[in-house]
Amino acid sequence: MNPTFRFSLVTIAATIIFYLIHYSLFLFGVDAGLTQKLLLETHLFIGMLTLIVLTILSLLLQKHFNFVGFAFLGSIVVKMMIVSFYFYVKMKVDDPPAEYIFILQFFVAYFAYLAVETVLVFQELSKKS
Image 1 (cartoon, rainbow, N blue to C red):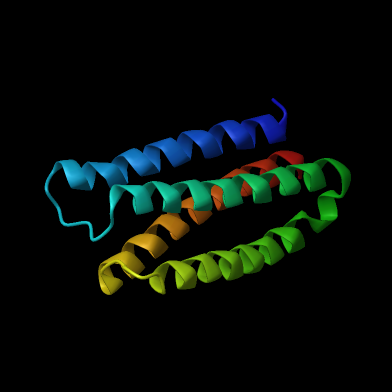
Image 2: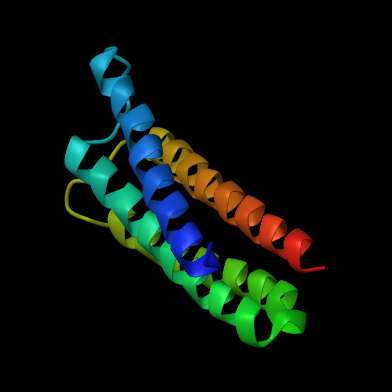
């Protein structure tokens, strides 16, 4: 299977699964500290960033295999800067969410997507080497 197609399918499935797991906190009455709209925005934003990064990395896998590890590390740094900026903007809105709960949930979501990204890239690198 083409890595770009596989990465896209897994990222979309992970976004849906992570969102549903996170949303289930609302259903069980756990005070998530987030509105449902903000929860959806957060998962869509991080999911789309992950999809973009994985698409770029899959193109590098096909053309410049030797640079994929370096590009992966660089993409983590760039993605963290973009996500941190998004997080900062969300914390400075007129009606900010509960700070500690939002910080915890935001970065748990970020690292969940990062784990998926790492596993996918590692599997592809293992196949190629």
